[in-house]
Length: 367
Image (cartoon, rainbow, N blue to C red; front, top):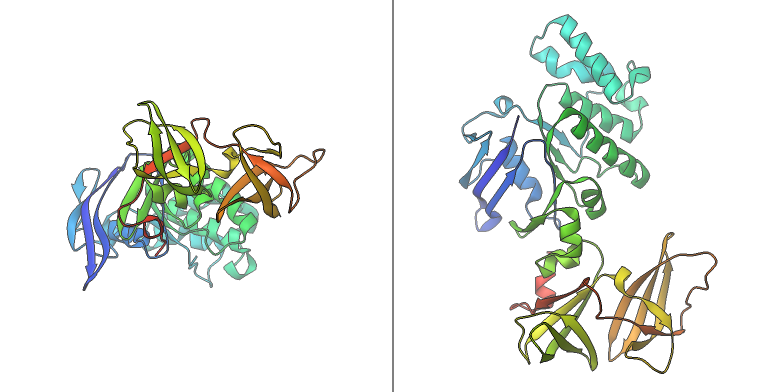
């Protein structure tokens, strides 16, 4: 069964470094999603794995064997693109069996495998349909089935759901994950959709400017990332610039534009510049009250998002805090202009990062 090792791979186009010394290991039967801003190198990376692009340096090993000089057709890789690219003149069954036909497989094997694929993607009743008679989601299911029918157990998915409607995309991503689990596939799935990656991946790889920033389980990257870029890119967050004004070895007090917040943290020194990070769902809001240590603010914006309401709270001195509060029909929601108290600083979900050497704006930039 296939595993993958990418070792110090770089790809240069003149002075442009599309990939910068990328190393990554993917286990057998692991489902890995690669995310990052447009142009970060994620598609270039899997095209190098597929053999479509040759790396400028480094090596790629499948099952421990270097594949640099191995032709695309001999790498035994299934590749599914965003551009579905079914053969328009062929029926669903003919598209599914195409890979076996060009390999001159026995007729009974072609029939057996195509029947299995039709059942696997739940499209036996559409076996005689042509691609133009199918929805976008159904076409992509056929494209996935066609790739699986080749017998490969290693798949590269390059934005496979990017051209589909949101609802179809959500349904099909779980179908992809089910197929991978049921068939024991090793999958690298490139996507620009963080929610898609978090919901189906065993492990998520975050890329920026041709390099791997961080990799970990979806929960690790969301709740306890090691990098400010990851914190900002994976889901919404509040990033608050401040400086340490007090420390006792186990926690410290950080001043943010005149407001203080106490955070569990060690190895910080008084005067050190830092960035406080807290996800909006960990920002409780309560009706305004005079007493207490909570920050005082006023509701600036309200957005209803179904299961949650998104609030922007103006604290003062140009500081805005975003809060996500579960929507409860029986409860009075806050309105624009309401005075509230914001509770920050307690709990494990408030993170503290050293201030980036190049500045926060450049560190979190998506170019």
